[in-house]
Length: 356
Ligand SMILES: [Zn+2]
Ligand SMILES: [Zn+2]
Image 1 (cartoon, protein in one colour):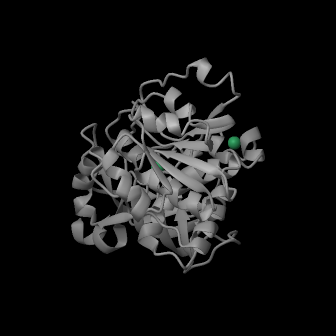
Image 2 (spheres, rainbow, N blue to C red):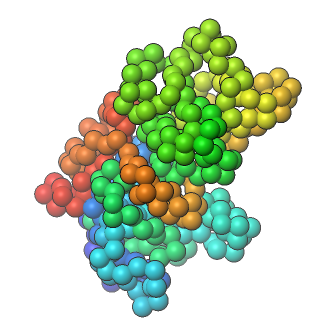
Image 3 (cartoon, rainbow, N blue to C red):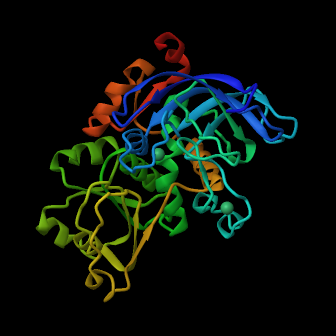
């Protein structure tokens, strides 16, 4: 904590119970290239849940979670050229990177080995980063994105992580072309965004889910063209070899071979969910027809801005349940049970002071 930093109020987890409670701390002194942002809304992502409960064994308590931040610029450093006070902006999963490695040079700073995560990360000065469940964040301008004015700000917040996590690989692997056929596995925070982007790209979108009860939701509410129950071997067989690409969003262990059957030869599967137990990849499911499996982790700042601009043009936001800060522990319990359609967003500015 730097001397003279900006006083901040957030909600933090103190231990592996993951229970959040009010926490006073200090943001770094605004540097020349920094933007100071009043947080308006912040989404709750599955990653937050893993971190605050120390499920990945790397929690640095106290942890202020939150990396789907939408806010308004209140102050900028002397060297800031991209933003000014009053701008509506977003901050996502990471807030800095080394800027000199191969990944940074190629515009894939999300894969920088020294990437600085927005929450529970280590900043270049050694400080632990604290996320968006707080009244203010201070972020280098190069890691801040502009949120289109046409989007409702609460429902835009999940675009900063969930949105870019599915948009980025769709663009990277050419799964954004009209007429192509996309499969989306799992209909949660990530999956429902993939359906929306896929439809906006003009693709034929099939949702693949283990829950038959999600058919109506997928096809009627979200506009998917088709729906497959992954356990129904007849349905799956009938759809074999029909898809150009699959975005697999499932974060629990699940078999891959049956999903790979759905791809055309040389089709592309992209994993964006992160099950803690290793998945099985039988070589017979990929070798004979040259199928490909890739992973994806969020997206670059450039991808994030392109995604937001595209979302602004097409009116794409997440389906959200907006909650007050003092509801956050209940929201996290519900998220663990997947009891949300499809993303919780905390009304930070509207409820933080009152709750504390
Ligand atoms: Zn996230
Ligand atoms: Zn780097």
